[in-house]
Structure formats: structure tokens, C-alpha cells
Length: 275
Image (cartoon, rainbow, N blue to C red; front, top):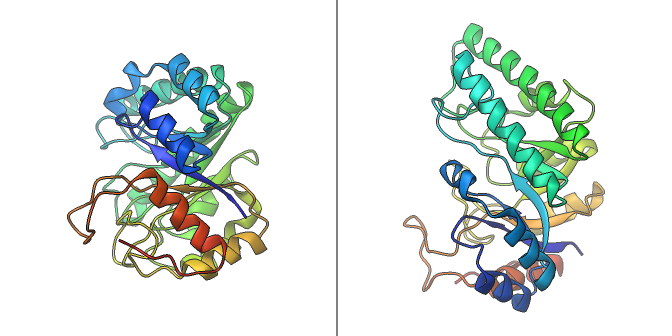
């Protein structure tokens, strides 16, 4: 049985939130906030709340945004250098409070469908990942490249493999609702040897949705078992927000306890019941 975790945005970092997560049985979290909020992060406060309530900081999602702000695959040197400086700074500050895993988007979007330009962007992303892998290593951490949807780089296994292969220290974050062109369960087999963390949410196989498992089309019993069979023993980390989105019907917003109820169902081999 895996441990249950939750991705936290800038509105979920208060004492009340950590207290409610602990009461609900959520044992781990990932910090994942709007890139504009990164200068306002109180790292010491987050670390203090994490320690006080026993909700460990499992990972930190590095900033991501549109191509003009944050993009490690940018062919614009100004954007590229600004992005690398920002991400390097976050890695330093995160490792100062003991975080050792940093999830990264290998590109922003949209990305080129033109073969020549996409090839240039893949090369630029790989070069950037090598730089950040070295930075993380020197700080006592690793980076985990996330598979992405739509036109983004790493939207197929072949592209993801190419990017993570640039440095043997780079690992993978598997996002369950980003696999649009392949079978998500078969995808796990291909990345098992580099898998270090997951983002859990459901979708309709047409685009990312970040729904609660059971609200989409993923076979959660098979997916969970595949992760176990492949040796994954990390955190089952939900990337689902509490407010009800406009594209799914729920009778109310989610609570922290809803995540542990959902995970306990999946871990016990039962199809999760949704609201």
C-alpha cells in the first residue's frame, strides 16, 4: 500500500490546511504554486508546518508558465536564461528545507509541430535538463521530468526517454492524466526504471482534466497494480484541486478526507466511489 499525498497550491499552505490534511490521513505533499507566487514563498513556515503536523514535503513542482515567462526549451536566449536562473534559485531554496525531488515541465506550450523547429526545442530542453540535473545533484536532490500532454515536449514516451537520457541522474514524474497518445498503463512499463514520483488524477483520454479518480476513464485498479508490480513504492500524490471544476459534476467541493477515502478504495482493489 502506498502513502497518500496531495499537490498544494498557494491557497493550501496555511496552518489550517496542514492540520486538516493530517487529520484526514494525508501524510505527504508537493508544493506546486503559480510561478508569480514563488517570490512570496515562506519556506521556513512551510517546513515548520510540515514538521508540526507530520505532512512530509515529498516534492516541489518547479515553476512553469507560458513561453514568454518560463520555458527551458525556449529558443529565445533571454527567456531561457531567465528560466534557468529562476529554477536554479528554487532548487537552492527548496533543498535548504530538505526537499530532494523537483518535478519539472520540459517545455511550455504550444510547441512546434514542424519537425525541424521541434528538434531544436528538444535539443534545447535536453541541454537545460542537464544543467538543472547538475544543479540539483550539487544541492543533494534530483529532478523528475514530467510527461506532458498536447503539443508539449515529452508528450510521447520516445520524446520523454530522449530528454531524461541526457543525464543518468534524471528521473521521471508520471502524470496519469497526461498520456494522450499511448496507453497510460503500458506507459508505466516503459518508464519503470526511472520512475520516482507520480501525479494522480483522472481524465477522459481527450485532454488533461485533473478529475478525482473514478470521474474519468482510467482503470485505477489496473494502473495501481501496475505501479506496484513495477516496484514503485513512493507517494500516491493527487494533483486534484478542492473546488469543483466546471467540466465535472459533483454535489460539493472536495475535502481532504475525500482523497484518503479515494486512495484507500484503490489500494484495496475497489473501484473508487465519486461524489
